[in-house]
Length: 479
Image (cartoon, rainbow, N blue to C red; front, side, top):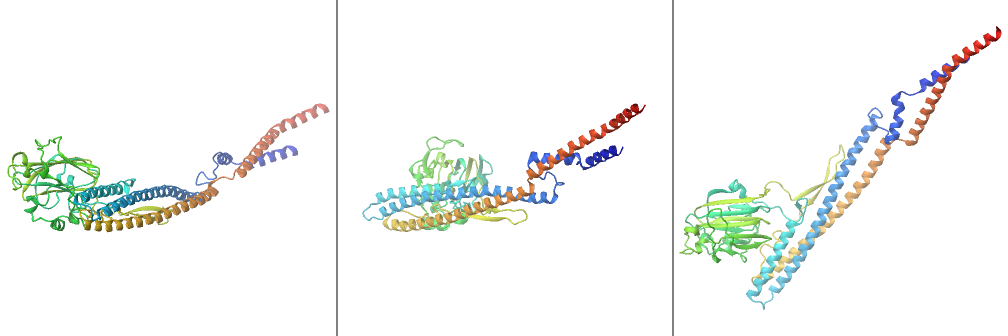
């Protein structure tokens, strides 16, 4: 009986040492996942620290992607500056050729056209060097107090009664497509005029026209001082450039009934866009340039397939007219939001203030480089243009130096973030990851205890039968 009691005690002791079912499964769970902490009950403090480290790691991943995007943005801007620098060098060569006293006016006119083409390419490069919808080389364009075309008319296809004068009627932002503007002068001479913000007169009538004269404008200085104002959407220091003007005196195409567009409109090209123009009716009716029009000469038409750079639309005259406009893909024009700096996140750890780095926009379009008034019409103008081109080349070199320094800083920030991420990942691993050797030892110990307990139970269950058999055997022997 003493042996039986001892075996039962050992079996009970083994059973009390066995962990509960959940505790028995935890080593298997840890071995299967490789994690020590699966729920707050495993280690509440460790889980809180690990969650903060996880937030840091995920934030650094997003920041790293943003830094890579910023590096690509800066590299693309530097490539664009390289192309602009080459165009400026070509323009300088043209200015040197035009400064030669042996050239005639016709020779300089050809060089002037070549220079204007190069400037158009500079503007297209500055505006087109974009990544993720932003350019670091193009200054933000605003319309000042001049409303955009869609703001004036409210909806496409609408007809309004408006007053002519010297104030720009509408601003056409880049991106607007399928633009068509028709005016009906209603008997008085009201003329369509189109300018670029830097002062290029693209199409319309020259300053000799009565539409300008009856408003007190007869010289370029008067136009620049009274019309080409920054508040009206022109660039600061805009100068009149009318060398490539599509003058309405050169022809007239009857637009036909309202809403119709003839296939043979006169056309001119600028910066990759084509503008169609009916011409000035007052120069082709029975009494040219008298300020009065009638019949088909009352109506003038403008079309633009796609606006690739901003345009300012005016209607000069001294009366009222009816206008109809249609368009597609109108673009918003920022007036109050400052987009001259783009910010990139460098750090955003939980509980810490965010650290940012600004990517400054360094405009390299012709207006920002001081090339708005360059020309090669005379030897003196060529020499002045040469000096302006030299300054522009120097400014582009400065921009490239600043972009180079910014690129280096972004690279260092990216390397620092990757190093910090590796450190945080290791720290989180030490908290969350399971000790595989220890967990395997625990699991083996549990299995040994379980098997030993099962063996003791079997022995304890068999012991009464063995004792009973021994007693019965002993009794039969004595009898």
